[in-house]
Every structure is written in structure tokens, then in C-alpha cells.
Length: 191
Image 1 (tube, rainbow, N blue to C red):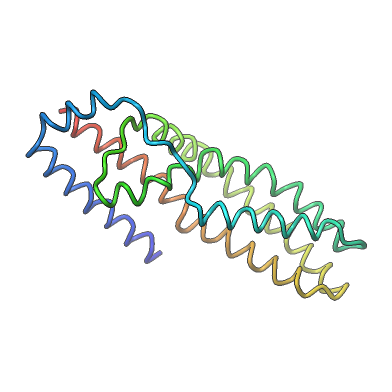
Image 2 (cartoon, rainbow, N blue to C red):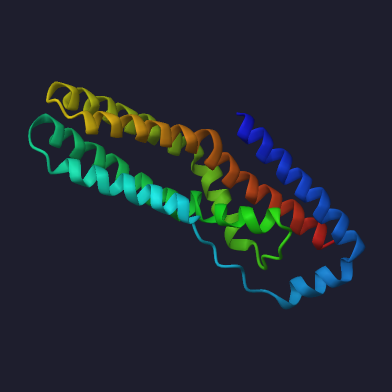
């Protein structure tokens, strides 16, 4: 929660700074915004891409195990894969704007980032519900791995649960706040 408070405070500080700069250089900002209609390409931060890739590849390896552990890993993969696809579509790309926004850099057209944040807001309850389904499948995977003596699988289930908690407490709220911040910033720029 402290990270979310700090992130919110940081976004508000940046917002105040941007508003002051916008008032000071209103004409310049408006002209720059009108000329630069192309958006900064939205990219999932490389650290998040690497983490998702590692989680996916590790789970894929566990699906090849035999017995109850392999079956439980396959069920977890079945639930997890479409969820990861949604996250990579509209919950993570706008997070790539955090650093440029914090540095006060121009990002161009914000339409796509705002739309992705709005999609996450609309589907937020569903995303959390999917996390609950994933946790249930991870509990089954953990039990099977414990019974069949696969400590690496047990460790993986704990890591994936922590990953989901981080998304709920930090990443999803940050992705939504980026859209809210951009809407406020755009309203100030256009006035």
C-alpha cells in the first residue's frame, strides 16, 4: 500500500509540475501537442516482460512432468495463459509511460494509453476474479508438488502468488492512475 501511496503522490507531484509548466508555456505546449499527433509507442517495461516470460516458461516446463503435478500444472497454464494475454494487452503497456511521465517528457497522443487504462478499469473485477481462480489452481499445484516431492514447483507457486499480489496492489492501480493522470493532464493542456 505504501508503494501505491508513493506512486499516487509522485503522479500528483508530476501533475502539479506539468500544470505549472503548461500555464507558463501554454502556447508552446499546445502547438507541440497539435504538431505531434503520433503517440510514443506503448511498450511493456522490460522487467515486466522478462518476469512474465520466465513465469510462463517455468510453468510450461512443469506441464511436462508426469503424475498429479504435471496435470495440475497444465490446469494452471490453461487458466493463466488467457489472463496473461489480457494483462499484456491492456494492463501493462501504459506502465512503460511511467518513467517518461515522471521525467516530464512529451509523450504525444495519449488516446491509446487512456483507452487501455479504461479497459483495465472496466475489467478490473474480472481480472481480480481470475487471480482468485489462478490461486485455486496454484493451491492444487502446490499440493500435488508436495505429494510428489517437487520443491521447485512449490517454490514457483509461491512466486506466482506473490506476482499476482504485486499486480493487484501496485501494477493494476498504477496502470489505471496513468490513464486518469493523462486525462487530467490533457484537459489542462487543452484549456
